[in-house]
Image 1: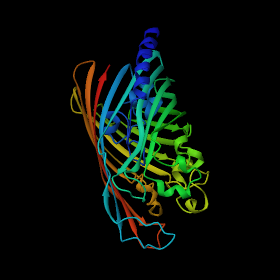
Image 2 (image 1 turned 90 degrees about the vertical axis):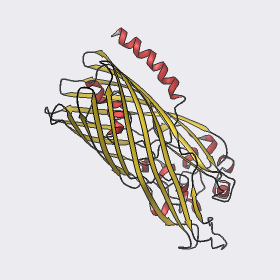
Image 3 (image 1 turned 135 degrees about the vertical axis):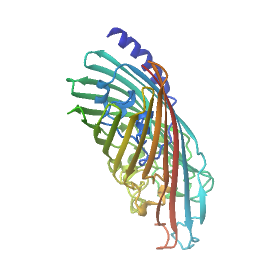
Image 4 (image 1 turned 30 degrees about the vertical axis):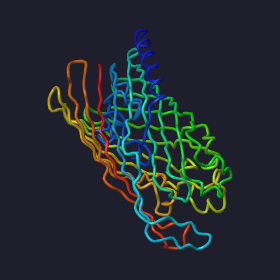
Length: 422
């Protein structure tokens, strides 16, 4: 047990260092990642009822109690393709806020996202896991003065989690786990000067460089193997209480508040034979728990200043996410994976204007992957994700009725490479 703790301490120090450099730009299920670790990514993020790798703690910490000692390192290349289209010219009427017509593409289409995890048996039935990973974020950079201010216009939100997990295998069939999560956020907004008259703190609205936010929450989980074929997993992640973005206290509701919303997941694992594993998950992301994310643009922009408790936000709704995945061992060395996920649309068509900054419209994700056992201790893995084009279309709410239409569009792909040492 002492050696396990000593080994864990070395990796924890490395993980903390990585946590300070990891950046994310995910915008998949809203602005959350579709999965963590190449095994889970290859199955579209399904697997809360399976113990696949050390990143299980990011899905269900109880699964770690069914794993042995191992280390997992991943790096992903994530590419979101974002655009918005405005049809018809502005009316020019007094009191309106028209946008220039045309189709515009966001810059910054490639992001490298590293992640790292380890798992150790402290004693029989008791397991320690530690992971650092990017769980979400959003990036846009429109090379135009979209809202009549400076250019470029956009936001850059990155989130990284440092997550130590302690799991206990109650008996051969059941395990429970808990993960205190330490969260880090970075944010920058540019080109929003035109909203200065709507802000209660205009100097802290836009173009203030990067600001940081820190905080945390907790995740708890359960995993039970009820028969040799069926397993059930469940996990709940609390709201992440974060410090305010002081440099953007005039943009986000609650004086720069930007907590991370709570989530839950329930999953079923099926293993009909020794070679095949199936996973089915249902989860929910509760975006409506965070005012800066869920407050509607109107009437907030007209009745409450940006930055106030009821100030305008992005109008995002709670979403359900449905995931299914499969993993099949072709032989002792090769394993292949595939998956599909679908989520509700978080952005209503009434909220398209502000969401030019954050067009997280994706709903479908198709994934695949493979891994190859190099020897008894080392394994390499690959996961790919494609999210076809999704759109949301609505009218410009600050123009005369039906004068302008705004369409948000995005497609995505991701390739992740992983290395495992047991």
